[in-house]
Image (cartoon, rainbow over all chains, first blue to last red; front, side):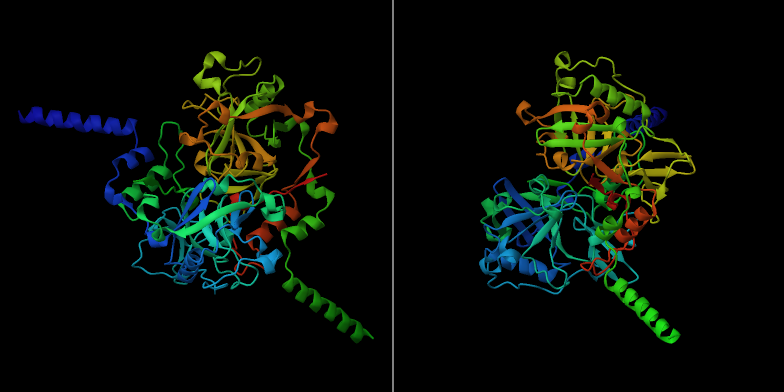
Length: 300
Length: 300
């Protein structure tokens, strides 16, 4: 009997092995086997909704990296600063930018900032805090000594300087500025819609990441003027409004969850993306760049 | 007198130095000082025009990397295979893909391939040829032992295996395939419209690069079905036709020039992009990833 049990067990093991060899895990498998604890709800107080005629763009804010800018953008949203302002610029393979079309051209007619600050000192980097989660990528990075994820956001670190900063990957949102580093404040924002322009890292303050609706910004007509600016008033795309999610009644909030990036499941996700073994692939890359790591979201 | 001349010369040198320190070279400066010999005209025989209602997409082909696929795509264009076919798929931050909407769903009604081949063996990589120009990037690459440019195209190399291959950077064009590596042939093509999906390198055959008009592919509505496929016939975007430039009369060809990538000027361009010293930048990156190197074009 013992011999038969052992034989059966060996059989089960063998078939599991064969099965594993035949059907390696994919991201879809990981999503299917994910538990409630693998997901988190973004804080409503740190979530922005930008409403366009085409739908809602949802930005998760990162006050841990840019506390002053995040507070100021929320103050701007709360004084309805962005309502009926415009998308001003769409530069192919680079950024979509929004704000007040009159800000520079017709300062007299520009939207007035009431309670929020007009400009802020930059928040290009911050101290590394070892208590903050950081899921480091094994394959390194061309631009920084270390990269990884903190709460779904791409983060670069330099242990030597003791600093860390958000990295300009697809969907990241920043506060535009003029030549002076302290000339931005969040009244003009941009989202990355192309190959990660990492040379912008630590040159401009990032405030968060688009977690839903990036295609409402990335599929817009490119502006004809240099740097993708729209030339004529009728090219501008109107922003209905920008709101802090916490200020909306619960039924008007989007019930979204973002995959946690401090879990064994996320480590597995990185691995199945480093080595794509879906049957279509003949040669897994064996590496992954931070710009190619997806952060899944799901509707509750 | 000699002392005065020396003093004047020193003065000139100093002011030049100060000037250089104040106004470092930018890409615009390099373009302005470029000579005719810094530019080249793509060969008409290896240039494709895809005509959309919104304009012309120009693809420079790379027969040196994918001779069979390039020949076949030209044969398909010459038998008017692509005329009135469609853009089928636009997946955000990934690819725009075009071909025959009936190919899989209604094979009976699918466009017939006359003289061209239906499928080809893959051309994922080729032997390194030291006689071919290769302007290697100093900062390396996460995915390959070496990367650089050959005639305006991003190329990866592995000296150990003796192989090189085109790299999936923004604007690169490839021949879609099914699960079998030899199931593609160029009847379905795609262009990269997002962060370089380098994990596709050597998994699918690249045939060239969009040198003009990528925004006609990247700003299209994203498809609603999984992987960005359009769901309904009226979402499909019609391709007027695809032609080899050499088959059009000279006056119908676009007079375009691409910057040569085997010149001292291009080396300078890489350097001014590795270290952006335009006055806006406060911290030059000191590095550049192949996906961030621009290849300028100009109209003649």
